[in-house]
Every structure is written in C-alpha cells, then in structure tokens.
Image (cartoon, rainbow, N blue to C red; front, side):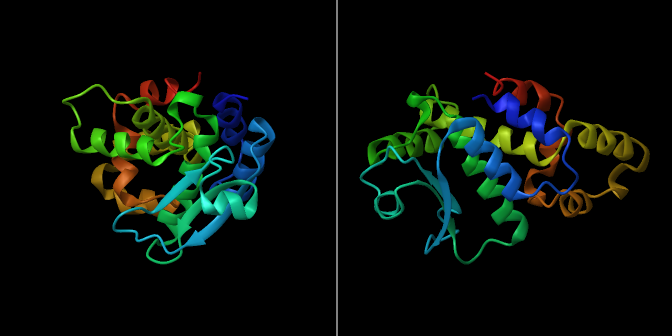
Amino acid sequence: MTYRQLYDYCQGLPLHIRRGPVRRKVIELTGAPITVVRTTLDVRLCRGMYLSVENTTARLVQQTGKTVVALAREGNNYCWERFIEVKEYMHAFDSVTEATDSGNDFDVQLRDLTTAGTVEPCDQMIGEIKAFWRAMGVLCPEHVRQELIAERAVRGQELSDYAIAFRLKIPELYVPNLFEPWYFENLAKTFD
C-alpha cells in the first residue's frame, strides 16, 4: 500500500496518463473505495477535496458510503480538473495524522497556508504538499520529464511552459516545478 507502487505503475503508462487507471490502481493499493462527485465548489476558493470514508460527518460520504473526491462542477478546465482529481486521489496514501477529516483539521491547514514559513507545517499541510508532488510524479513519468529537460536545454524557452502543459495535460502554472533542481528530492520524500 505505498505510493511508490503507484508511481512505478504509472512510469510505464503512455502519455497522457488517464485518470481511470490511476483511480483503479489507487483503490487496488489502498482498498479505499473512491468515487468522484462534481459539486458546487467555487474554484476561487477550492477546486476539489478528498473526503475519506472515515469522515462519517461529511454528507457526501454519508450519501455514498465511500471515500469521495469532490470536484467543482464549473470553472476547472480539463487540465485543472484532471490534476486536481489525481492530486485528491493521492490523499489515499496519507498517514492517519495527515488526514484532514474534520473542520478543525482544515482550519489548522488554512492557518498554515496563511503563516507559511513562520510556523512548522502541520501534518495536514505536509499531506497536502505530498499529494501535490505525488500527482506530479504520476502525471509526468520520469523518463518524460528527463526528455523535457533535454529538449528544453536544446530549444530553451522556445519549448514554452504552455506547450509542455498541453503535452502533459497539466496546469501551466505547475510546469516550472518539473525543472527545479529539487524536483526529484521532493518527490522521493513521498515514497514512504
């Protein structure tokens, strides 16, 4: 039941990595029964969320009897929706202390967002950071990332962030992360 198993599985999938196989593999590895629900979330505030089946106070969990990945019905383009959906699946690998299963846990996480760098991140914030890097590792296999690094070394900014985002079907905002020297170090911290 480790993210590393999912990561290894996705390394062999063709681009662009599809959500269905990722969800099925996450369910297989974690045993978490996951369903996706589109809701009235406002993307200006929240593009999606993960509600664990253990979160028995959440209405969507009560209604479905499953872990819920809730996505905004409107406002996410294809790349955003795909990335957010996969990122939310990654919370199935969170430790018990990293889960955001209550309003209080979410409030602590929001506090960390507003005080970034001034306090030690709470476990829930660490879980959110891990989910981001895990999604990046799933949606851009390492051999593809290495090809992009080599291609950008030759073509420079002629190979734009937008072109890469289009190729990978991820938000353009996150493309620069693929080229950061600490990329694999951050990803490797999630392999536990």
